[in-house]
Image (cartoon, rainbow, N blue to C red):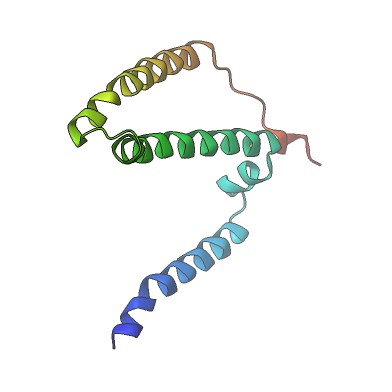
Amino acid sequence: MGLVADRRPRVLTVVALAAFVWVEKRVPSPPAAAAVQDPQLHDDLGAGVHGRFAMFGAVSFLPQYQQIVQGASATNSGLLQLPMMAGMLVVSTVVGQLTSRTATTAPSRSSERP
């Protein structure tokens, strides 16, 4: 019985994904179609994903490194992370402000197709 219960989330995920694809193929103007085919969006998303992985790795594994290799206590490893977290806070705020002030909407490439 436990094995069947463990498969339910996977089965539901596959069913939901199949339903999403089925609906998107039948809608006259699916919102995801242009975004999936845009190469610039793929580049932007790829850069964003890599940046998030780097931040996740730094925030997750840097304290372990400091504790195991450098011999810092748990409190000190947290305190050693404060400059990095403050820098991430300042940089994300500045970049968000710059993006909102200077970003322009690019024309959709889906309109160029016949």
